[in-house]
Length: 554
Picture (tube, helix red, strand yellow):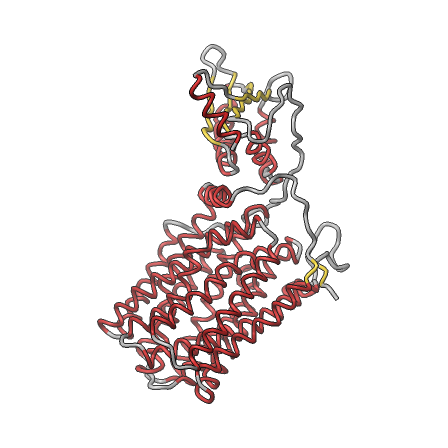
């Protein structure tokens, strides 16, 4: 029986959320994918324990041990933007199926190579890199699909539940992984991971995703990536999240990267000890996820993230200085809670600040910043540990964490809100006298306003925001000019490369953007609405005409 992603009867017509933190479970497709993903996460964590512990026995330096963590995060940094563009351009369910099947094949090969005794440090890193390249392809589609599985009002709860699910597995998965490695060997841990993908592949195959017919041709991969980068670059709130996420990942990632060395050299334990320490981190993360809703109600975004930085610094210091496993585990409980509070809040802020057409790319850029920071931090702290020991590296990382929290004095995070980012759908293509093709262009747009002198300061402030929105959605060369002979007349102008780009730019206009437009129109004092004139540029030289014709025929 296929899984239906249509809204369930518990949801009213306005999309108002019911059921609180567990409301997303009222939707069968989310419930099924979440459960299957829980099993897959178990396998991934068991594989991670096996890889990290195997590296401690075959590596020749601490540097190679730390690179296990880097190899799991580097693919996300390298491929996330491409994966985000794919998530926004193709069927996300099919993208996830391809990614899961690829990871299944790579995990089977990893298990076979280990059983045959063919494994070396660099080959282990290569397999880890390939498996997590599948994760990099899967992750933007999975996270962006949350909005396809539940209404927008339930997205924050769904993001938190995803964190809860991952950290439930983190709380017990590493300990199970340690038991499997200790009792049956690393190859068995890798085989268990391969089996864990099967359930999610089955669920995704049964998901009856509601298809939305595309009203415009699909963008090329390069154009889609550029549009995603442009959107994020022109969204200052998202930019702040990216900087803070990179700072958090590059410092907090040191604990997970060096934890195998802490388990072996500082608390003098084995694979089971390492799994228990990771489990303590996971328990803390589950607790952090459960209290995150309440904390968001009583703390501002910036205060909550500063506490997360400070709490993780305490975790790093505990791991560096404690020689008792129980005390190190207590520090990791705090660290796990701070980890999920910060990263889930970053993720939710990006999702709630981004419309559906670009959410996969925005999330992929966020992941690039976060996991790029983790990969870079893992390498840096691994080098420090190789030269001075894991405790010194962790103390230095803890000091850097405190500095990352202080970064909020310069780049404070925006308060989480829920703007209406659904397409406005008021714009209709104008009737044109010329027979334009979608590739015809460049197109020049001019909009004329009549503004009283006393309204000019407010008009300029609103037009500054209007220009940002235009450029964010694809407009180029946006300018605002004033008539020298008739100062009450103002002209807004911008370009798009083609007519199709102009249509696409107008289709991206959201309800939240419309508030700016309405305030500008309220200042307009002309007898009619602001006059819009659309032009197509025409070259005058024969050489340019031939080049344009050849380009249009390609």
